[in-house]
Image 1 (cartoon, rainbow, N blue to C red):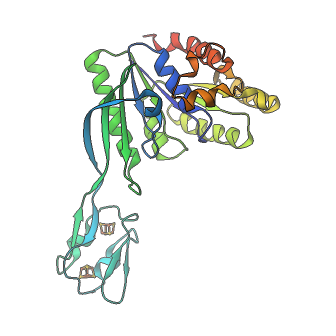
Image 2: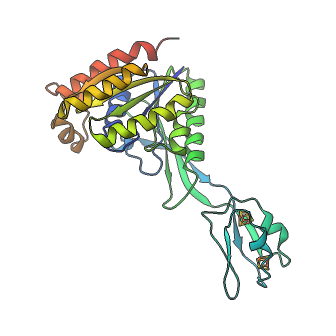
Amino acid sequence: MKQLTIISGKGGTGKTTVASNFIKLASNQIAVDCDVDAANLHILLEPEIKKEEEFIGGAVAKVTGDCINCGKCEEACRFDAISDSETDIKIDELRCEGCGVCEYICPTDAIELKAEKQGSSFVSETKFCTLVHARLLPGAENSGLLITRIRNTAEDIAGEKNIKLVIIDGAPGIGCPVISSLNGVDATLIVTEPTLSAISDFKKVYEVAKIFDIKVFACINKFDINLENTKEIEEFCSKNNIEVIGKIPYDDKVALTLSRKKFIVDSKDSEAGLEIINMWENIKEYLYSE
Ligand code: SF4
Ligand code: SF4
């Protein structure tokens, strides 16, 4: 089984368009949507949910009893999560690491560690394959943990059903969720554009991918909007042993097709669609090799 994560660093470069069309073109595959904060792969794949599980995040401290405002917990918290007010204390849940020191030290047992629902994960069926996806509640933390959970679920299903390919729509950005999207995969495809911000993010996300010592592919979306910048990306790729599997031309049919919930690879007169099919042909042999 091979696992491919499609990432971009910057949002809006066409990552999910490439991922969804690859999912349609593939065979013997399972799909994972790691964008748990703002998932959108389901818009095209139209999944039917078969199984839903609650995602309970790490425990955080809460004041549930009578506080005598002795200040001991504030003094003991190494993460500066506790502050004092006139009458009692306040716990900043975003800073709390759930270490439990305050609960242990409190003389009136006023503090309790509590874990709460932070989202849900789903196993769904689509027209093409099983999709494992998730939704984090607004303001909830631990997206990295939730991504690890859905990736483990996808790997288990792939193992049970002898599925040969896991296609992962990676999380945006360059932080913890991207690391969770890349951990343990065989290869990544970075989708970029010839704009200064996309190039900068491409280089940053490549540095993250390098940590994992995996095969790195790239594709340049809307390559013809700035040929000079496209050349710069190609030179960077050539210096860093990144295989460019395709250059997608600007094509206004992409937005139109998406708005109609259609796949661009099905649009016979779309140059972008044809190039995505070419890209798939270029990467397919690697993905299905043992
Ligand atoms: S559980 Fe640990 S990190 Fe959280 S408020 Fe208590 S002492 Fe601070
Ligand atoms: S240790 Fe307990 S009683 Fe003292 S300030 Fe903290 S919560 Fe209140």
